[in-house]
Length: 497
Ligand code: SF4
Image 1 (spheres, rainbow, N blue to C red):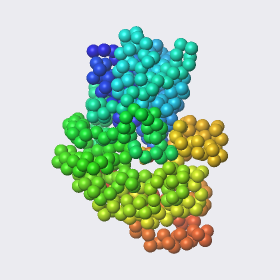
Image 2: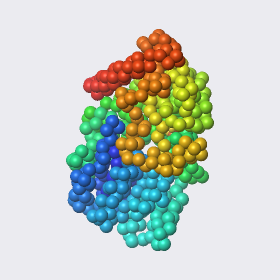
Image 3: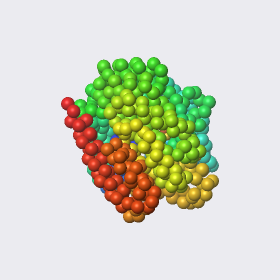
């Protein structure tokens, strides 16, 4: 057995990236201690406490790792990453390595804190780095590495060629050396073990290039390194799920975390047939309007698909095409909704991003009119636009003069709470019931088919600036009903024998 390595994931107890790295390091002979630091809570995201940092220090003292890796996937929780990084540096003389999407896109910023950054897919690179360091050799030529040279200059090496995802094995699950730290407590064991859900990916990459998403930035880094969008074999996916089924006694739902679920001819058919026979647990996926068709969806429903989330993002063709860089037409979106309804997917959710500076009130209304055309039943997931550092839309907003550079930085690097509040607003906290609020309410109300007959009346009142409070009140009532209905649906899934 080689040295002990500690890997820390933030606000994510499933943390697929850390679990894949843990598996790769174990295969390479390392003992891996994984820490799931803080639980994810979108309703009241909590900050890191002194007590939690102290628990981490005690754990490092107890497990004595030789290297520590921090998984920095997002700018959302950077303040927590800084605190953890500073605490490690204050009490220990250990090399700290950052990886993950944020560290990959901003190695220069990451190296203000970390000793090394591993960019891109790190399963091969992380073991190679630790091997090199423990042998006292120089890792400076290593692919995927970013570091500061002896003069303090940042050196960013190229990434290695794309690997076959089937070769990466399965993410680690159920390890005794896994810990979770949250709410001022530490728990021993994999926090996933008692859960009802299991998350996995059947692919890596996404074929689209939405301007608000980091996926295209990662694809650019891998240009010329092989095919970035890759699918696992059905054998590999089902073997992982069989392992999860054995390990998780309470497992009720599988969540495919793929950026967009596969529409590969042949793959879907084989997967669907075998999934139903070998796994037989309801599953949910993310879809894209251009990848939805009868062949795929009917196969997946037969296999056990119970929920699909499809990103539409705006009812305005201009916003979708010119701002979000999405090419689907109104007809293609409406057709997608027909297919999902005809194939009887039990739960269809359409995702929209509204209330951002690119959108006029007229364009917000276009979202309402598009929702009226979508085939029910469906639910809506409505939220704001989150400016992720490095994404194309950040520069577009700066070029358009919507924000100064300083204002944009404040948005992108605000506290966890500030970022959440600008992204997920709470409808019940609206103190200004104006046209914008009410058109948002009208969009929300389209997901209740029973209300369709009165929407025309409400719409005409709103056009004449009347009945605004009634629209808003109806929104609040239906919002509560929706929450109750969703709780009931969850309970039904979980309690199903
Ligand atoms: S389809 Fe989804 S994952 Fe793909 S680029 Fe767009 S937002 Fe990102």
